[in-house]
Length: 90
Image (cartoon, rainbow, N blue to C red; front, side, top):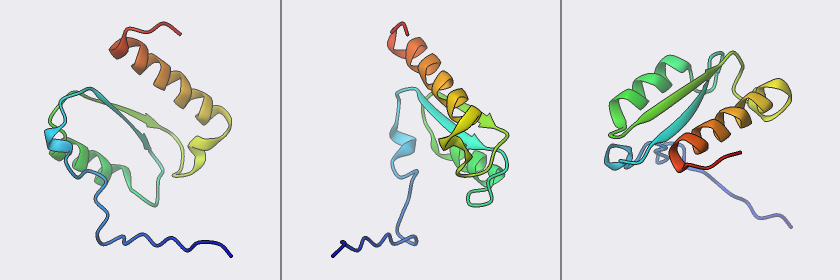
């Protein structure tokens, strides 16, 4: 038997507490996302984050970041972000 996990979409707030955040944040946005449209995403980010926000946009759909060139670009950008903010060398 598999456990059933329910997410209450009406109660889920991915930006909850964002205005109190003071550490650098990198957010990746898919330009052709039909699940969370880019204009809605960017408006929410700009309205809610209190600290430094680095926004990376990619010419892909919502789930395309998990494979292929988009995945490699995402990893490259993550490593660059970590390297610049954590003083690490990759």
